[in-house]
Image (cartoon, rainbow, N blue to C red; front, side):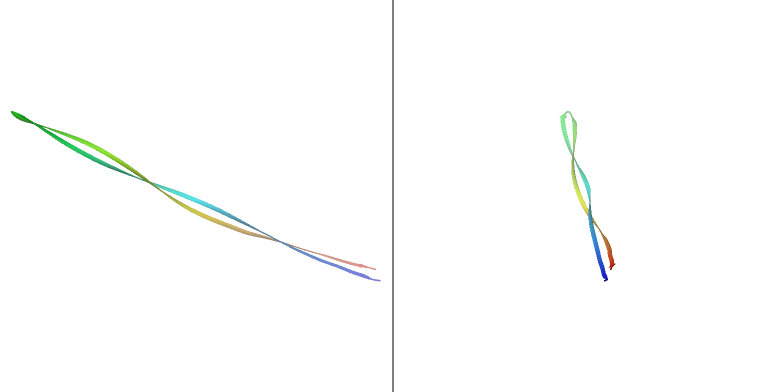
Amino acid sequence: LSVFIILFTTVRHTHTHTHTHTHTHTHTHTHTHTHTHTHTHTHTHTHTHTHTHTHTRTHAHTHTRTHAHTHTRTHAHTHARTHTHTHTYTHTHTHTYTHKAKMIGN
C-alpha cells in the first residue's frame, strides 16, 4: 500500500505604499514709496509812506512772509508670490514566498 501526498501552497503578497507630500511656500514683498512735495509761497508786501514837510521823506517798508507747505503721500505695493512644490514618491514592496511539502508514506 502506497500513499502519495503532495502539498503545494503558493502565497504571493504585494504591498504598495504611496506617500504624497505637498509643500507651499509663500513670499510676500512689500514696497513702500514715499513722495514728499514741498510748496513754498512767498508773499511780499511793500508799504510806502510819504511825508511831506518842507522836504520829502519816503519810507519803504517791505514785509516778506514765507509759507512752506509739505505734503507727504505714501504708496505701498504688496506683491505676493506663491510657490507650490509637490513631491510624490511610491514605494512598492513585493514579497513572494512558496511552501512545498511532499510526503510519501507506506
